[in-house]
Image (cartoon, rainbow, N blue to C red; front, top):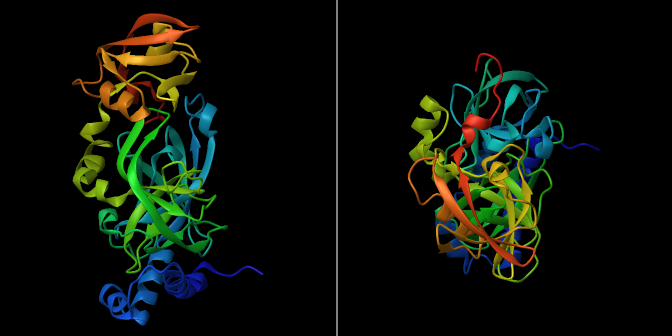
Length: 347
């Protein structure tokens, strides 16, 4: 039997409250009352939050660079954040997209256009081209969340699901694809439908947008499957730029075109993008990157911070690498990644 997402939203508060008790999230009943709105108000807020989550389907342009890793057709979710149909999602869903559709709870399919793809934060924005008739959600702050705080995750579309979760850690996250976000939010248990899903606090405020499945949500050496969410704190400072320019100033930065992993205090290249600056410079999968412009880079975070230390997107960086046990020095002439992406006609 299929249970409607709106019904699930009404029961989510019960799950959140029960989860908080079981996890010992709140020291006393009075402390809980100080932080949490009355049950009826919270239930309405969570129902509004759940109803504002829509399904999202995007189709990338023919020949899109990103199709090799993301596929040409992408499915995920988005969250309505203003009264004019502006929907916040995770950027990789709409990267190089030529078609975007939003799917509402009442099975309407609404065409949308891409407004922004922000490389630095990872956010994507689309705007519905017909009325969504959905109330937008208020924006919250990920930095205000406390460890083990009960939260709600909602995905959209025909298979949309709502569930309770808890915050298990908050820390910097370095992605293998030249990506770094400070104060990322990590939740458990893991959800497979994380792409663009909304993370909400008990007041129904949006505090994060779903990005990834991770095996180490708690950090450290322990294994706890979970999800990484991009914190909403990153959005307000860059929203004017996203609406007017399609990306933030921080996204105009050097790009090499490598995927890397870190292990045992070293960074190793696992993939080089065809025709990228790294490919042209002669970098290969298996190369270990030791230094960038003379600066040791033992972790992904150190590598990306060193790469973006200089000004502008086009510059020459020196990489000291090890290949087959032998040291080499290569020069990579970086570019603005946006210039390498394909766009739909007329965009």
